[in-house]
Image 1 (cartoon, helix red, strand yellow):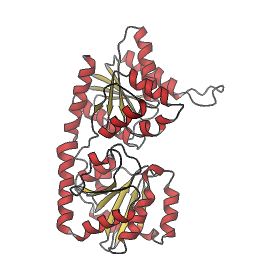
Image 2: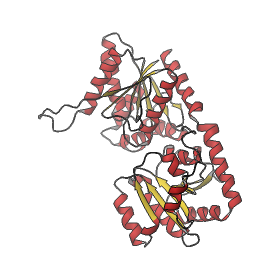
Image 3: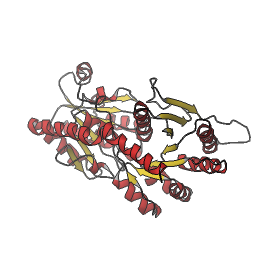
Image 4: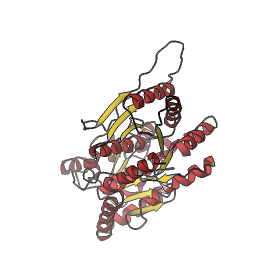
Length: 375
């Protein structure tokens, strides 16, 4: 198959999943064409059968704001026509599904039947898409897609409820390469972060308000009352400055390490003892899956699609949003009980390998592509 993939090229989960999907499909012999305004950051090395098409932005002085949606639709049409694409697979509804619909309709006039598949990832449905100005467009573009997938059952149900959509939505969970994310501890890094053998709590995100990164700092403060511990925060975003201030206000800034954006996450995650994910909203929780694949128990909030991933009292613990006391108690309990900790760690790795490994999920996408092409 020849497949066009459009995603945001940044560090967010939707872009990561889209890029890894494209790479996995290319390895299986499919021809993949990425269409975006910049090279996806996970496309750091040459991969056979993978091509990148940059969306060129107009800088005509009449336009005060960029016309990305129209420029994207134009590039989608161009690539679909000249590369003879079978499918255009867009990740994150806004504005990709709308641009995809425009491209599909124009090509239809040229007797080209381009199949459009939209994958919903989370905030495109639960946050941004619910803006009154966007809601009708998001609903329309989902309904006009030839196929729609969601990364969790929770997100599927939320989409149907919020947008009153009758269209069938296929649930295909996020996935992970468990050969890249695996329990291989970087001793040098661990000793640098925790020179006196302190326990390491870890969190990675885009530092947006919805991630509640401040909660991880409050959890550390409470855990430190009983166990020497450090907190490693990976990523960057609008809440970082506030997190740095909070760590100073609580007088624990020496125990909170801000690493910023990092590649090679698997190696870093493997140095953690516990992964924290206290989000206010989470359609799936890809960062938690990455930690689980590295054999780390996860302590998270009970929101969205997280319970489909983290099994309470098996691979970690789930608490109510904002209940930092409960999260800290769970962390102390695990860190005090080595037998239970090792069992949770083992369960996390097994669940990642048996349920969310790339080889388990990518065939589901291929089967879905074939279903849509034959419909």
